[in-house]
Amino acid sequence: MHLMCIVGARPNFMKMAPILRELDGLSGIRTTLVHTGQHYDKNLSDIFFEDLQIRRPDVSLGVGSGTHAQQTAEVMKAIEALLIDLSKSESPIDRIVVVGDVNSTMAAALAAAKLHVSIAHVEAGLRSFDRTMPEEINRIVTDAISDLLLVSEPAGVENLLKEGHPPDRIHLVGNVMIDTLKSQIDRAKKQNILAELRLAPNQFGVVTLHRPSNVDDPKVLEGLLNVLSQTSREIPLVFPVHPRTRARIAEFGFQQFLDACPTIRWTEPLGYLDFLCLTSQAKVIVTDSGGLQEESTALGIPCLTMRENTERPITCEEGTSTLIGNSIELLAENLRRVLDDTYKSGYCPKLWDGQAAKRIAAILAK
Ligand code: UD1
Image (cartoon, rainbow, N blue to C red):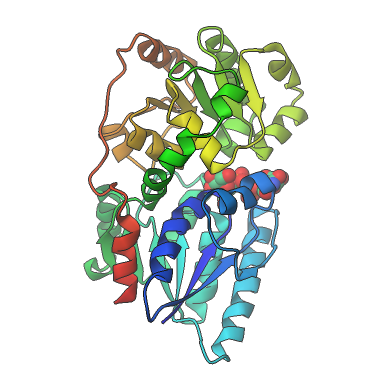
């Protein structure tokens, strides 16, 4: 069986790493790893291959950035050509494996579906019910055309059933992102990043913001940067700045926030191990990242989620996440609870046990 595993952007790499490792350990399965090149900066791409010891991609498409339509179209064209090429070889692709909800995920799935190549979608069924998020469109489209729907939390199964997907295509397998976290946590804790940033365990916060809804509107971004400056007077913060956010800060002339806050450590985006070293020893995480909501729940670290909704409800219901939207009052109130040690505690959801990739590989191998 020949499987094509497709990655494109930062959150894909830690999801695909354990799946690829499992598949490569099975006899009778051949994998081709394709990197679309949606993310291409060293700190958003190569560093994850090094940190997670992922083998080099067999094919790099180098599609790069663009508008949604441009990027989606470039990935579709390149994946279509590759699939057609391989269909003429002695080893055509039997199924593609896509993960998550980025543009590369949906584009690869669309190209495969039109060529009648089967699709397995890992992290299927998640819904924020907010179609202004590009990722929500990507999730709905990818699931609609996938043959195997591999789900990380029970809400995903419910959503897929409500949408009319046949039950025999849906498998609750757990969370592959947490497989990677569990396998790397000991290595991560040996990183030097706390000393480099002059931080003490449990006495700092980690911030990431990159969603268009938080960083593309100058009023919203200014409000968030203001609260972060105020918070940093009580507890030092580390803020690895995504290229989109850095570009908006420059465009809106908000550089003064970066210059005026010595207790916020603004850094380039960090590699997997450095970042996990920080998040696993943080007092609090403030983020709009879906992946980080899940990782903080697995780590038991309070997570204040700067979003109005989440496609990962279990992180709020069972885990350590609270939806803050962009309310400055709610953020301040919940930070107070964290600092006073009265913030809720959570637990790690069932099947987020480090074995999700094994379950996925067993299903794919059938
Ligand atoms: C993408 C995903 C998002 C994910 C995020 C993680 C989509 C729709 N969005 O958002 O779900 O949470 O990745 O980071 O797929 N850029 C660089 N270097 C790079 C890549 C991008 O500087 O290596 C800059 C470019 O100016 C680009 C912008 O960042 O236009 C946005 O990149 P893009 O991949 O379109 O979306 P992200 O915001 O990274």
